[in-house]
Image (cartoon, rainbow, N blue to C red; front, side, top):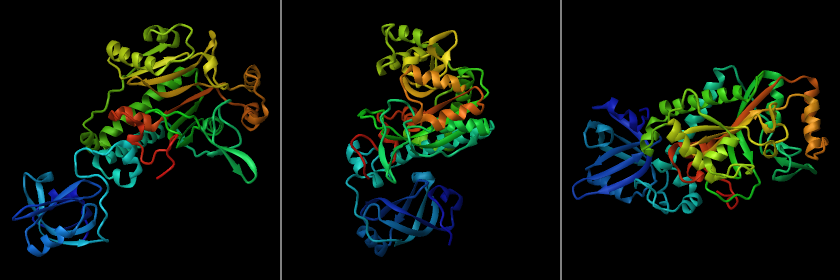
Amino acid sequence: MQRILSTQLPAHVGATVRLAGWVHRRRLLKSVAFLIVRDAAGLAQVVVAAPAVREQIEALTEETVVEVVGTVVANATAPAGVEVVEPTVRPLGPTAVPPPFDLYRPVLTAGLHTQLDHAPVALRHPVRSAALRVSAAAVSGFRATLDGQGFVEVHTPKVVASSTESGANVFALDWFGRPAYLAQSPQFYKQLMVGVFERVYEVGPVFRAEPHDTVRHLAQYTSLDVELGFVADHRDVMTVLRETLAGMVATVGERAGGALTTLGVTVPQVPAEIPAVHFTDALKIAGAPPSEPDLAPAHERALGEWALREHGSDFLFVTGYPMAKRPFYTHPDPARPAYSNGFDLLFRGVELVTGGQRLHRHADYLAALAARGEPVEPYAGYVDAFRHGMPPHGGFAIGLERFVARLVGAANVREVTAFPRDLHRLTP
């Protein structure tokens, strides 16, 4: 008999079926017992009346893996309006050691630190797993949207010979006796691949050896990177980003509807045109001094509130960041060279995306490195490619965990990350 999932039970009323999953909860009443079985799709209620089966159920523990064979009957009060009766129950492994918290409760009562210590079982909770389903749907939408626009997915090295951005903190390692680093970004490689495919994207891990201990930073996270050639300036990049976000949000709504219901959230609307303000105006809106070289988290929150109030938008572009705060490969604004053809995208008052137009002439790279007192040699393999003809291009990177956290209203990115790596955590 082929196994079916809990969500398929309504289509099998009157039939004998086989379920398999985890003991989610047992309710032992005087005349009847209820066994709630959890599988990847949801929950199924099993009604146990036979004394021998009841005795077996009493000996089980939560999270024991079992197989159930029984008859499906309609019951409006049961999950999905059906339940399984007259069952036989067979353990598919040894009796499980229950986790240090109850997974059957609507919300995990354990603190986040305890949940992360026991992540392999904490992630089984419907709320925790729902966030990961949202994440998977977001990546699916990211890929599908870009595939539909002629982009090619690439896979670049995660071990590199130099840091991506001058002065950045990187994780050093020994590469067969030579110094190497974990890549903090695929930036150099995705730019070089524009010279091959014109439009590329990548989904992969990046590593930041920055000692941040906040609710929005991880030392390893998943970056959704995009780079495209033959742009007029950064505004072409912003257009592609807006379309990509719309595709991601739509796919989350289509493919993770059940997860959104579990989390009690609805997806935001991505405006047809996301409002944009120049960095200098953003400082005024946020009440920051005009000499500020960057936006602090408090400024971002103020800007997010302004965008929602003035434009009804959860998203806001801030353009024209000072060149002094942008990487050396950033293209300056021809009309205001102290400012960049770069941008950040704020999502509900938090920086979600950094992007912009890049330099594409070899001489400009030499001049940019020289102006910052940076030697060319560590970047020679990258900079040399621009001698062979590169089109005007630009791109962006979305932090997946931060996107999902803002989307579902999580207070900490670790709540939507399966096995987070940060300043303190290297296991499990």
